[in-house]
Image (cartoon, rainbow, N blue to C red):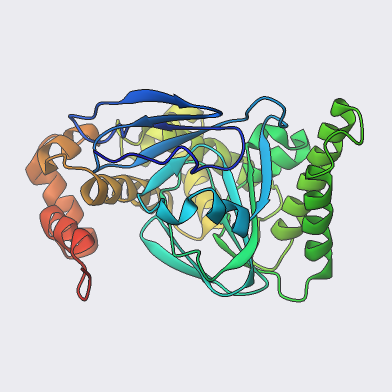
Amino acid sequence: MFVIPSCLWPGGRLVVLASTLGQNSVGAAVDSGLVMVNFGQSTGILRVDFDAGVGTPAGVEVMSLAEFRRRGAVRFTTPQRPDFHHLIAAVSGTLRQEVDFTTYEATPGSWLWVRPGQVHRWGDLRKVEGHLVLFESDFLDPMVAARLETPGGPVLYDAVDDHAVDLAIEHLCHEYGAVGTSPLDVHIAILRHLLSVLVLRLADRPGGLPGPTEDSETFRRFREAVERDFTKTHQVADYARALGYSPRTLRRATASAVGTNAKEFIDERVMLEAKRRLAHSDETAARIAAHLGFSSATNFNKYFQSRTGQSPIQFRNAARHPRGGA
């Protein structure tokens, strides 16, 4: 049984729910001071919910990586699927983070942005110094939160020699540690605006989040529909009908937003979920196929192999036993 140490998560309460991927997942809640931990089987993806503790601002937490290490983060190597944002800045050393099967390296001046719903795994933090900002989307100024819902959003940001970003995190850290120096509502309002500044500064970096357009609003609705219904249908025409657009409009909006066509966008989402479940759960290919809306395991196998060159089982074996791995 995989047990997460009670000192693991910074501040408040981290709620870690047993994986919903494994068909035999079970969970039990353990209340350890300010940390609530639910743990289940060792395989699967841990779903992590943000829940601020008493006396801390709801919806945001700011700390150094040194503090994160002190609270046991070096032991948290199991894949997790948080429902909140992580902004991680490297100040010294190289930070490696796996996000949805891609390994990213953040060197000094770089930031990693892990978004809600992405599956990620912490790398070795013992020789890395930097900052960690955890926040829920609705903590931000509403205009900024809406900006986060626009298409795009890379994981790795280069902010080397960006004085504005440096000032933004410096001011945010200072204010977060200044509890009691202002009325609580003022303190929270300042934190909300300072976090919004940091998010906008990063989003404004080259390759960051695009600004809203008519096409991006269409794509936002399409993306939300795909996220909700990709296990039910994989056809562009079905989404177009449900949203009141023509398939051509969805294809144009998707190409403008993310540079791919609408069918490929749907397929990428289906494939991502398939890979997550194959790599991190013990579900059979037949069960995964049924969950993802395929009429049979055979059809799923053909679909998967045509896009990866591997059968689902070959992919699972490679993901769990990479060459050169332990």
